[in-house]
Amino acid sequence: MLLIFPRVKDAILRDLEGLKPSSEVLRILLHGPTGAGKSCFINSVQRILLGRNAIGALEQTTQSGTSFTRTIRSHKLKKHGGGRYPLILSDIMGLEPENAGGILTEDVNKVLEGHISDGYTFNPLAPITEDHQKYNHSPNLCDKVHCLVSILPADNISRISDKVFHKMRKIREKAAQMNIPQVTVLTKVDTACNVVNGDLKKVYYSKKIKEKIQECSIKLGLPLNCIYPVKNYHAEITQDANIDALILVALRDIVSFANDYVEDLEE
Image (cartoon, rainbow, N blue to C red):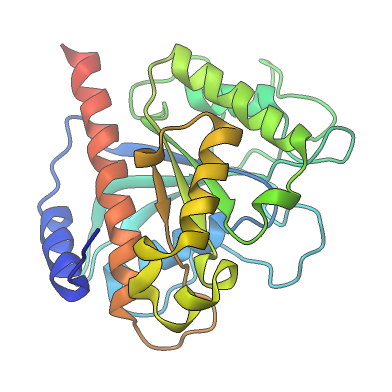
């Protein structure tokens, strides 16, 4: 796959600027194991859209083994020059093995259905109950999820617990029952492959990254063309067109899939 990175970036940014979805907003849910880079991906997307550094979702720099994000928070992305895109990225608690904490699959399913409102603090020991003040009894279309995005770290896939993948597959099953489109964003490609670390433009030619994409496909049951390799902003102070282009390619398709889903619901 040949990408002329600056041209790709500019073209996608123009398309997003004119985004007029079939619903008031498109809601994208990010989920995955603890430490996969969910919050970092949100910040990277916002940074690219603003053209400057941005910290909307709090991140943890150390690997503690437990989720830093404890609540559900919806990030309505800001535009460069003012205003916001009709696009929400929802960040939730990370998945961990059974009996080790992390968000419960029952709660993720309720998020998919739009039943859990912003600010709810997840309890790893018990799912939300209908009498909770943050339980939304009558979710509208904008409260529900329009695309499910699994975030996985390319450098650590082989070490992720089978129990975590089991949880992710159960969540995928629920999303499939609702016909919600699903993709995977494969983060940390630079630490997974030395060649890519030296030149991010070689990500689509890397044998190592292809192996990671195939491993991801096998473990989640997702088609290869629904897995997007990216590098999040982490230590970089200035913008990098190569990082931008990879993330924007993923974002473009995520937005398109979400809008297609909403259009199909309205037919």
